[in-house]
Length: 259
Length: 308
Image (cartoon, rainbow over all chains, first blue to last red; front, side, top):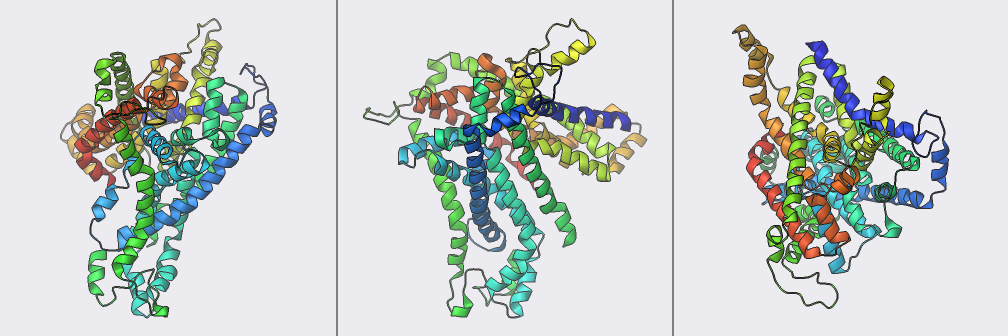
């Protein structure tokens, strides 16, 4: 029974990873038409170096993701601290307001942003994508930091204050260092949300400001080439390394043990 | 916890970040709270709430209000399903895709979670869970594209088949409904594994042992005990999958080709090609109403399983 169960898990993992493996392998295959037998070649990666469109789109993607991570983490952390440590009226309603960016299909959020930004003159482009990505990332930051806050006892900060520390100092010297792993984890999460975002960017991008997923999509629509495989592989490597960093820093279970 | 903490120290309402005691300046507590919350909610208002409001008002307009066109109030776009009968077929396709994807994810994901919870432990379980979640962090577009490598004519699937039987006919089924469903199941399966796993690890071994010692067969235990106890996980997983799938447009485009016409692709076309924004907005809000209905129906279950 145990053996059957484990075999089943293995089969599911094969299902999850097989196509990705094929995608990576085909990026290293010489044939432009994905023909076999397999012949190793780094040709498509070399080709990528001279693809100005993809390089500038990659640069846009990383830049937008980095700025999104910084803004969303600062705003989201402030909100998370207020939501979990301060008393005020309407808290439940404010928590509910964090749901739309997560729960509404991106197609609807993205087209709504397109309509509104166009109408108000905000327009499309780099700044519009940034506004959208930050909004999509904030709820995740509040969630990750909020979870981190539940593992830190509020009375530690109060103890510091009753010993004479000013409130600002108590927060920055007691709570913030304890919270730092969660905040860093939240920033990585925000970075990943932005880096992987396609739908919203697709509606807000202009030719000069498109991000990597948007460029990949338009390349796929034109026809499949191993160059797409190569750039997808690089994007995969980026996402996976962020994930590994995230598991190092924001382990909700582990931080609970520590306190 | 924070509530009684606050009541224990009433004489220091200013004990908050933002107050600057060294300067002797004391900001009122409500102002500090407001300053902490305002940036986030102002941003969400600008980027999410106002756009949704704008789109709602667009959906009642006769034409896209750009340029000098006369614009009047109308309900006609919400009658689109009656006026343009082909949309009923499109909606039916979307619904089929949504239901099949959710159903397949539920079956495959439930048993994966069950196997993880009952047949693995410790480090092995941790590693397997991480391996199941990992694809989540990778780009959905990349994962969808990766399936074209497998199921296209002469792709990896054909390669496998022909290594067994050299003259095998092509098994490729790219550009079909099953291709779209396959790609979506691949994309959303981790949700179901996670929600079911969270529900299943809480089941106490002694309950299952009690059932078995009283003579219940394996199937009886599964259907009468395990499945009902995993129901919250199955329901919240299904909601989390059905909602984004019903608005999917990239997966049908890439894996469905010309056959991949869904509500998602029709809406996308209204905004990028047809420039019939009011119709696109009305269709979006029809889907949004459906989504809100689903969330309202299952809000109790969702709240309970998310608090775990």
